[in-house]
Image 1 (cartoon, one colour):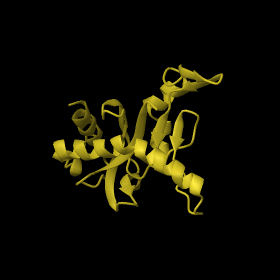
Image 2 (image 1 turned 90 degrees about the vertical axis):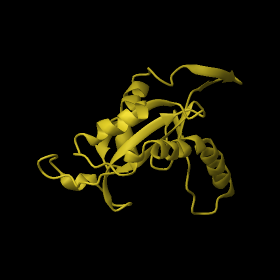
Image 3 (image 1 turned 30 degrees about the vertical axis):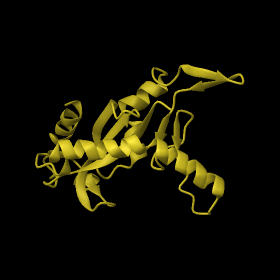
Length: 170
């Protein structure tokens, strides 16, 4: 496992208007009930970012942002996560990411099941995945504590993603 991937909604104090974006409703996050942009981060177990993307409105699901992100394109072109790390019983084991149920299950992206049927094996698997994802959950809390502006951005919607990425870089 080389890292975890997840998204976090960054609240926009100003609702986007039609002068700033074609579809204002795209920024409305139905789960959180506010306008937002989505920050997607890939970090390692030491909470070091190695990919940051803030390019979609708050109404976009995690998997939707992932499929238009740079990291997805790099994986697809075999520029990232393609080199085998070890060979176990003749099987080449490659790098992979851990994600939550919002991401698609792929050979390079393991995600939890969120079982509802009480399947003991799936519950155990989810515990292991979620244990590996602790760093990504912590990184959003640390980021938002350090850069309080990320709790509620008061800027135009076209500038907000740059502010978010700038905070990640700093």
